Image 1 (cartoon, rainbow, N blue to C red):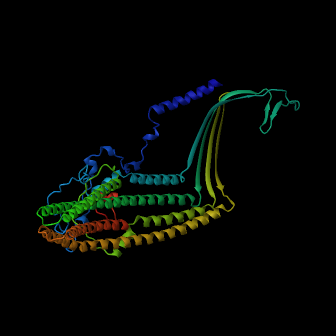
Image 2: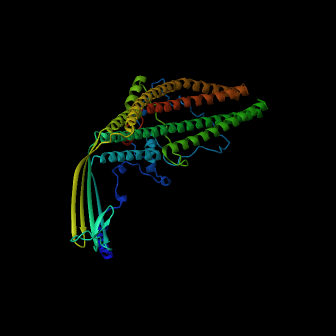
Image 3: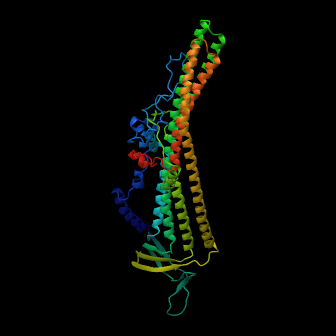
Length: 536
């Protein structure tokens, strides 16, 4: 018997070994998903090159090159400019951070974030999972085929005292629940049993179709959520980018203030030597110089933090500061609030996700009601039994169509139908809430953008007045006619005016970016790949 089993196993191995050696059976790792072509590469961040830091983004958005009206145009003469003066004689212990790569424009920074940001790679996996669930739902429409192959042996020996039933009858032993076997029957044989089973669900009155529609809608939701994730990253990079520009501009402003304070201290010491002013004037100049140095150190600290935030938004390490580029002109925005709301209805991914959620809930209600209907199943089985000794064979083919109908389950299906209807109502309420939130976000961002744009015009005259006032006070101070308080006030007023103007400019740029994000018109992978502006 053992020899027969070993012989069968040897035959099976003879069939499988050539298949494995010839590559007919491939390892699972070699099967590639077509979605991998869309996945973002995982770069080696420790070996970033200029080619990686400067992705192939054709040009910055076209609306960034449009000029403002004359009232809002920050011409070079209107921007805070350094006062021509001698370099400070004090060393700055914590200077501005140096970029480790070539400067990046804003579209290039967004394109780099699309390649390096790990959150986006994680979000792309949700699309792969949704496609897999869609394929799983579709597989229920196809038949299932299962096979089984057994090789073994059996031994049957019947002995003992025969039971006499009567003359001419064969003596036998009776086995309970199995039957009777003749006394003296001894069988030792091997066997092969091959089984093939095919099953196909023909009709379930919409159960599978509802689940498949749910899976397709879930894939659409994953795609919409991924697009919104790309827009979120683009918005975070834009805000962080303008934050770096703001921090650099403020740092330059406080450097100018430090130079002016240093010049004022030098003038006070000169006048003290000539006997024109008192010692108190020099002390006040030293205090003003110390205050401006503290402000400068705080500005440098803010610049480091802003660069770290930009690195985090892009997906770089915090010790890899990148250079930024000043926009050539402040972009205009001449759309009305109604246009912004219409754009949000058309472009916001959350609105479309809410619509899909309502459709998914409706399909779930359809599936719950289909559970009350029966199932029609086609089933077929083919058995092939081969006995070695004595030689024998049994071939059995069975085919049938079965109707399964569960008539009572303790109210489970009724409860599931009620839950499904409740989910539809819940999804509709959530969709209404999402629409209200989108409208509020657009209104808020629009009002802040308008206020920030008006702030640019309001802050510019203060810079001109403070600069002229400081010039006059400094001229008087050189003659010994200005008091220390007037000098300090003029210096502080000029620094505050320049700081307010720069804050107004970058508040407007940031508010405009946030309005685009609120409308859902931010950058997407398609616009970044083709160098196109967002659909504002």
